[in-house]
Length: 474
Image 1 (cartoon, rainbow, N blue to C red):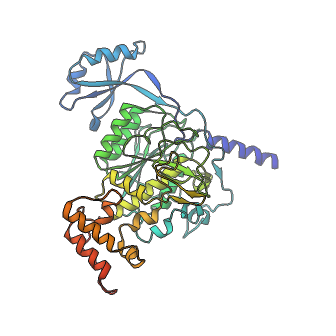
Image 2: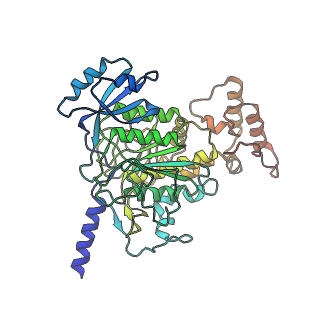
């Protein structure tokens, strides 16, 4: 019996830990007979491709991208040169596959055999009360924000929609780009459980946010640059406020960068894992400008041995986290920057629920400025190669939008009033200050209303009515 259990555990570990979407993808391989063509916005695809010797397979209209096929024996460079001569074509890229080569974590994917098969109240306690997640202040943050009105997209290998945490998911926030339908359910394979685990952590950290699930990786952990670009574009077009990208590649790609840039310009916050190779090689999309890269730390705030450097803006718990797994396991532990990214995506959702007009770059700056630099082992001096600007602090991030409690604790001072007055008079915010911190009523501008509010907060009587009653709501 003991031998059977050991063998079963080994098989389960191999099944679940085989390769993680968030673990750095292997270098891309060009797919023979395929290319992704970007047209200028004034050109007609039918006219441009007429007589070009290609067949249009798919498109991403928002990006002007067209996936085309041609005879596999024609080299991609020869086809690119031919297409480059046609009016209306901006550039042609090879369509590249992203394949995972091996897991970079040592300890992953152990199902919890003793966990309940249901969600009830605060059970299972290992999920709702896990210390590593509470260490970033989520329990306190939830008293001010739970992500109401925010949509967080998860681009992954799907989720188990029968899981009690996720059984309320429904269209139109679901898309399966692998099977071309609206049922992004996970399929058993090397990556089985990854998307479900990621979604479970986002549900834990932003319980009131709407989850958008986009399946872009198949059961073997394979996707293409075109499919990922398509997934990002679909999330943008269908109302995502935050996109969690627990995947990456060590090879920068123009199509992926284009999709990320368009999403940021559209006002969508992008969060990505920095990867689990334990190197300082940049990982994309985490390393792109405007994308919030996330590294993993352990319970003592030390950087995880597998967490990559160079691409991190912030770090978050990523060792032995507890979350949802697909049937038949339901619950278990896993480690990786994938899951650190999920916690940061959720924290961004908490912030946007309080300040919905906040631009992506401002959210990135805000999460950096409210991160903890004094860690259990000592202080981080930002920007650190591995820790970025420090450990994410969900409580501090949302507290910045509720200055009254800070005033009562003595944090709000005459210096704050002086900074607001200076910003009102000159339009200039000092480099060591946060514009969002000075915009006390969060209406998008620093003006006399903020100055008057600051004076009331500092000198008003304790029983002063709520000064934020006119603050815009989502």
